[in-house]
Amino acid sequence: NFMVVAPILAANDCGAFSSKNVMKIINDLKAKYSIDEDRIIVTGFSMGGCKTWDIIQEYPNLIAAAAPMDATFEVGDNSYGNHVDGGINKSVSVPTYYVGGELTPLPELPFQAQKCLDRMKYILDLNKADSAAKYTVKLDDKDSWENKFWGINGDFSKSFVDPKRKGKLTLQFFKKDETKCYNIFGSIDNQGHECREHTCEYAWRYLSNFSRDSNGQIKGGEIEELLKTIK
Image (cartoon, rainbow, N blue to C red; front, side):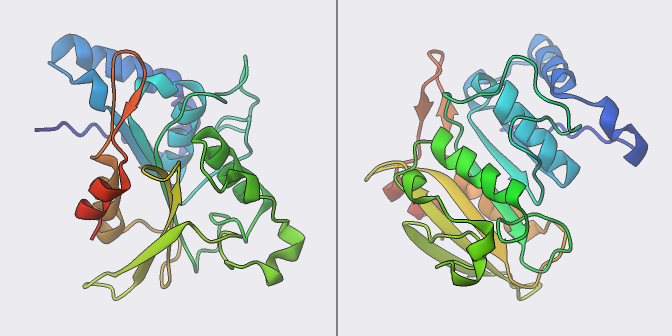
């Protein structure tokens, strides 16, 4: 069993809802319900995706994994564009599934904006991906990138067609080491700025593999096990 908690805000109220508000909601739920604190996962689309990045940056020990979708902002700032007081998380790994639409008019993928490129570099470094040291591509050189959306290819990739929309979801897997994968970057070929059921299904297939124990250690992420669910 699992519980889904989804704050709904009017567009003009988004700026009033911070990562501290998320923490308060979670603490209130813990007091009311029997919550498995090892398996708290955060996700969101657009502004919700930005606020998911806030949790990764500010409260990483709270969560087992995250799926910020279709949005990012400058590394070191929060989703309001303000610098994070006290600095951001640079040591606590958070398994992450990030996706964006290849046709979006907004900056979601690295080929579109420097902040997106910097964000992918940040999460590869944070999760100690084998490819992190290779992620030195420059936005000005995007026409010659080996991967036109991400800059570099993952250690391996898989593609899945949405039977309803016929869009192709391509997932780039970036290994942490020879046995584990803490980063998946995905793009959808006929998608603009939107979030689809098919994309969310594959996010869950990935995220559901993870937990964080009472010592703060991530459990799960073995590639062999991931490929049993991501298919």
